Amino acid sequence: MLSNHSPASALSAWIDESIIVGKDHPGAYALASVITDVSAVDDLRDTFRALREKKVVRLHWVAESTKRRDLITHTIAELDLVSVVALGKPVHRQKQERARRCCMECLLHELEGYGVTSARLESRAPAQDRHDVRLVDSAREKGLISRDLLVDFARPTHEPMLWLPDALAGAVTAAELGEPRWLLMLSESIDIRQVKVR
Image (cartoon, rainbow, N blue to C red; front, top):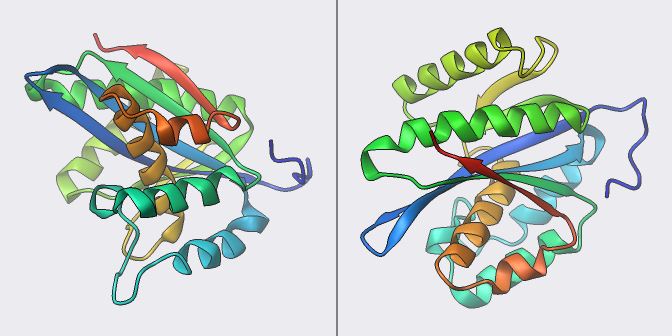
């Protein structure tokens, strides 16, 4: 787990989500993060850009075949990374933002405990990003995270680091739906925290 990390260097986290809502499942919200040393980010970006198929802008779990999901998951499993996932359940179709709030509070608190100093969320729509800013401010006011943890946004079309938590979140929700193969491949480096959605 981050065996090459120097105490003098900074840790960053990259965050994305996957959601299950439907009649045959009580619903789940997986907010996944990948923690890495800031000095390793450029090499990781190159590694995952190289996994793209021709003319594809980004890796995206939902669009990948089973064979490519195997490849992506195997690549992540071979890296010196730590992954933390807040898995919220149950999730009603109309209460996804409530699930996000519960998972965000848990995940950001855990990330700061790991020594993360900056976290990047996948940017959604502008109104949703503003909502996330309010969630972060609320977490600070509650004392769940300090003001030292910087939280910002990035877009997956421009930031390959977001492709990793996208895959992790997808692996977690796949396991929830009865296909654990990818989550099992990641079992050595993933820390899943169960969150009760209130």
